[in-house]
Length: 112
Image (cartoon, rainbow, N blue to C red; front, side, top):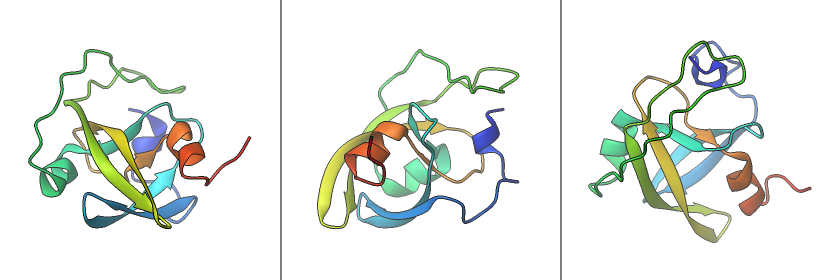
């Protein structure tokens, strides 16, 4: 399991409120993540758009085994008046949605 996906992380550390497909979500800004990830259950609440197949498993730095996403979907994401269509990977599980490093840069949470 990817460490960032486990429930025991500190709840409010690096949390950001975003509007994704007309619904406000709290997401964890994860500067080490290469993908933006949401639970599959949340995907079903957000949209009826079909998932695109993805064949690349996810593997975290300390992960014991790879996680296979169910798919990917692009969703409009708004923050402070800025809207970007981000690719979200859908994964089974109960976890706080993760915002990738690139998404953090695009939304100006982070600068290099």
